[in-house]
Length: 318
Length: 316
Image: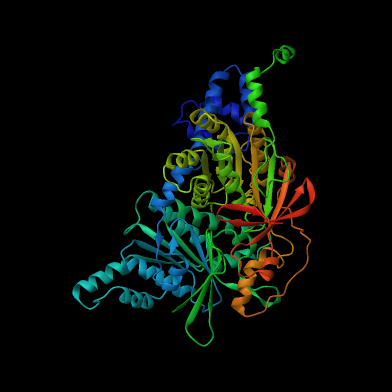
């Protein structure tokens, strides 16, 4: 947030007199203003010879900070936004779509939890290919472990769109593949970088291709786990910020956000989702994947859902 | 001067009457029904994740935005404004609208011809989401002006301020402390100064706009396997093929993470959690069983409740 000096150009009422007055109370920026007692400040301003102008300055800054938070909306507006701008996006995986009543929700953060080789990456690749094949929009895929497989994507895309071998089919295939943007990300700071860039591009409509509908981070836990071991709160702070950034992108730009998380051994050897209690509260929907022994069937069950009882199970093949 | 102001009085009889009538204690729907709550109270609703906290808020909000009466039909609501500050950013408006529709349909049988009532109720529900503590502070600082505008527009008073939940930015704020530069008396932005300002702003708002504040708080119960972990672990158990081992321990210790200044603001405290009993007794039952217990004032007994489409029902 801006220091007052920078605001002077745009708002002439925040003049050097006002700045000196605020500085004498230890207020140099809009941030300082936020943690200061404004009633007390207004009372001090009244005692000054230029009280009228100072009070105008305080009102001006109040209207600036009114812009710093998300706008208030009433229930009707919020309902309208949910019904008309937050669609359900199918994943192309029948079991998952049936279980979730159509697919993944725009505006929500969905987390896939499961041990290794339980099909997490497969579901991600499948969802990306399906969305791109059906020309529903662009997919941004953050790959953290070199598990993004173009062959697998091409296979899925071929399955979803017919006549691959004709001239038109080939052009279509290229178009579909161009709508899946993969970024290799190996640490959380790079992820913040990519996500902030994405947010900026979407805000200023610079994003290449069509509208971004699906954002995948496979896997989020491999980015967060290395920073959690630190003594102190930095790791948890970064984890919380990452969760909020993903939820903000999901809500403000109507995107489906899909992240994957691995499992770790809990007490008594029972596997539980990694990243602990703080992360547990972040996602809207949490799904557990597990592999059946001896065949390629996977089962998926709801651990947490805003409008569904947990425990529902579906099976599918990879 | 001060003495004269004191003698002059500061409200008319009509103003006093409306103030007193709005400050009367009112009973909320279960499980908040055990203790009479007044405007000016700050209730903390603590519980682990998925313990029906937001459901309780939604139920209270629906009761508040419904009118007492509409076209001769009794709804028993309060016809007041609800301000909902979403810090978890997980609120689903569909849950609120479904419950509201349910309440409107109860005496009528259908939603037909009640769209107008539905819309009027929904407009009394105000919502904002905050992605960090600074946004939360900016919201609180400008809430007074916002409330004045809303009151004038709807011509009704605000009854409830809801915060769902307090404290999700705890770790971010703890990590973002920096040393103030440029001025010797500059306050530094830290967990401490942020919580102080939040509490101070809520106190000031309560003076200017008498209302009830309900804030949820996500906690981690000490006995993870007996309580909040139970549901999740049950499925984990099934998935991993290990048989469930029950825990009968009843103590509820949880680590308090909110600073003392927040503790000094709250006047009432209730603890809710999912019960693990029912998983063993009635595993096929649709509705989960929850427990609620007043910690402040300490009542020493628990209510059991279930969540259905129509709302929350006490089953003890």
